[in-house]
Structures are given as C-alpha cells and as structure tokens.
Length: 293
Ligand code: GRG
Image (cartoon, rainbow, N blue to C red; front, side):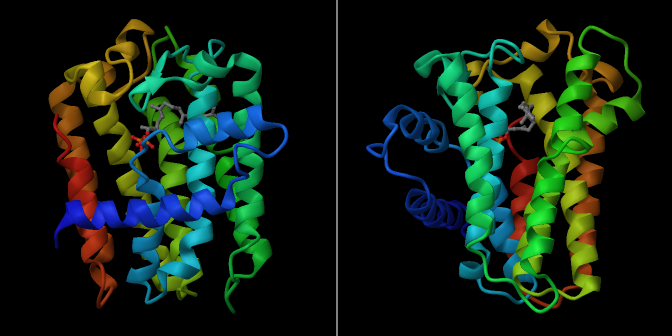
C-alpha cells in the first residue's frame, strides 16, 4: 500500500470531521474556540484516529461509523498535550512545530482550551452509532476510563513524581502504559467496537494496541535523545534536561531499540487471527517503528 497517500487521505478525512464537530472561531466566546482550534489544527499526525479507523476496517466495519470516536480521541490527545506543555507541567514553548497554546493565548486560556477539548470529546462520542454488542454507555465508559485518573492522568502523575528520582523498569512501564499506551489502545478498541467486533477480535486488537502503544512511547523517548527540535517539532533533549524517566535513561539506547522492535513484532503477531484488511494496521506499526531513530 502507498502509506504516504493513505495517511494523507485519512488525515484529511479526520480534519474535515473535526472541523465540523468543533465550534467555529467566531462563536462566543471566540478566544476559547480560537485556542481549541489553534491546537487541534496545528498539524498533528492524527495517529490515534487513523489507528481507530484502521481497527474498524480490520474488524469488518465502516470507517464512517468509527469517525466520531476517532475524532473524540484526537481531542483528548490534544487536550493532554496542551496541558502537558503548561509551565506548571512540562513547560514547553514548542509543539507540533508551533508556539504552544499558552505561549499564544496565555496560561488561563490554555487551561480552558484543554478543558474544552476534553469535554467536547464526550459530546462527539455521543454522536457515534452504538452497535448490538457495544451500547453508548460502554463507548462513553471506555473513553472516560482511558482519559481518567487511573490511566492517562495516572501516567502523567507518575511521570511528574518520577522527575529527578531513580525509577525501576516496572515504574517506567507503568508511566508509559498509562500516559501513552492507554489512549492508543483505546483508539483501536473503539474502532473495533464501532464495527461490533466479537470478543476474540476485540481481545486481539487490544493486544495490538498495548504492544504498539508501548513501542510508540519507547521510540518517542529514543527520538528525544537522537533528533533535533526542528525535526521533532517540539523541544528535543528535554527528557534528559528534566531528568525524566525514559527507556534510554533506564536501559540505554540499544536495549530501548530492541525492546521497541520486539513490541512491534508482538503487535504484528496479535493481528494473525484476522482474515482480512489488516494491511493498514501492519503498515502503521512499521511506520511508527521506522520513524528515523
Ligand atoms: C496532561 C493529563 C495530561 C497528560 C499528558 C500526552 C501527555 C500526557 C504528555 C505529553 C508528552 C508525551 C511524551 C506524551 C506521550 C505521548 C506522545 C508521544 C505524544 C505525542 O504524540 P504524537 O507524536 O503527536 O502522536 P502529534 O502532535 O503528531 O499528535
């Protein structure tokens, strides 16, 4: 498959849908809608929604049925980046190659823009079509749990508390599984649910998401060490400067690379039970691993 063209067409589809779901900039109060849109349309890769749509296809579903769920996850992801960049968290000036939300709109509006993106995610989920196995309460609960204080927020708390401290592998894995892998896993799970996936397929998709999500964060840790800020579109080398808990810091670069490769293999293997339409998921897993590092 032509991955570049595939990614571009999926990004466009997702962007069009997000544009429809988000209030226009002119809607009162304009500042908040400008700030929400500024961060949401700053050029993110749309990996989570693309994975959601690809999982729906792998489970025999239609991408249009997965689209609201895919967009909701991108809103949650963007909220987490906006808040993560705040001076009271990671204090970053650059995100997706542009000044961060609080640099442009101020801290108060950036906090509220994150709140707005998190909240609208649930409104967007409510537009999805439930299926016979997965009703609306299941879909909403999945999203709430993934974004909540035992997953995404738990990972961020553990990350903040680990700064400057010695951390072991299990502590590090806890951070990565919750801060990064949880939303990625939920992305593919929701895609599968939109396709009314049977329990066996949902289980396989979950294994795929967990392995890929962890590999993705390990690769992100590696890139922070090996790439320039220009290439990353965010400040490079921040993890070392902030004494962050990362795979390269705990097990070194080489072992981190082989761990990422092994997890990616596990992700591919998890797809073996599907009969068709897993080409995109395989290609996305390879794409994440082969990012320059
Ligand atoms: C504030 C509750 C809360 C959580 C923040 C997302 C996050 C948790 C922290 C951001 C820093 C970080 C290393 C997150 C891990 C996930 C990650 C690698 C995000 C970047 O994802 P990409 O590469 O970004 O998909 P784009 O911009 O392409 O969407």
